[in-house]
Image (cartoon, rainbow, N blue to C red; front, side, top):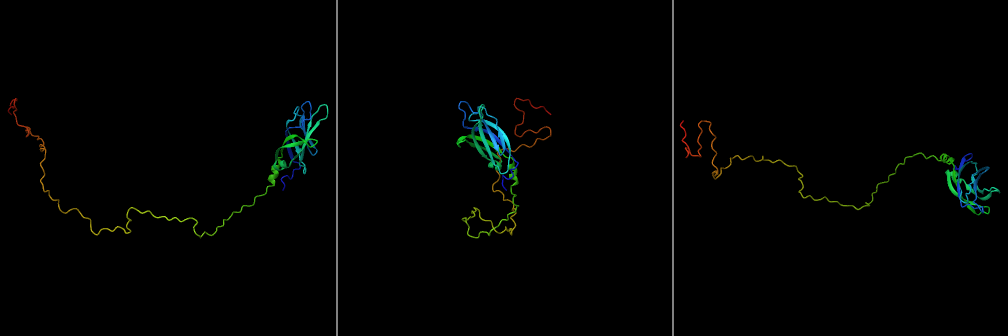
Length: 242
């Protein structure tokens, strides 16, 4: 299905942005250009850009009802005169194929004079909203989903593609453990000695300090110390008799 099928009765939006490097048809003053758009029998005219000269700006938007089989738009530039007829500056034929297929076209088109020479450039923006609807309707349905079953081939039985690395176990610094479990001893462990320890061959030496005195007796009178002489002492009175 063609992307541009069914344009009959659809609307095309055309915006005249401006022009540059127009052919100047005035000798003593600045020209006053305006633009005429023609599609079949439909004509639209922009305002006159007074003193626009060679670089005029319009920024005007127009709507055209499309006809099936007609995909060209004609643009004509004129110079407005007050006392005489308007002067022809140049024209161009705009191809609508890109706008009708993609929905949008922003291009600069070259104008030609009466003798086919360069007469300037015009910038137009074309917008065709129905292109998106037509493209959506003409999109083909995606095929139904079918799961892909993987195919496995036989495993590779040839020589290895990578070098074989031999690994050796590190030697332990300790002797290997016995492979047999520990057997209990046939004899009981030795007990404590059945004989008392032998006496020492030498008697114990004398102590360097005298033995401590016996604890004091609670009887009265107190016992005299064995380490001090008994009184009376010189310069003292004899003890009273009991």
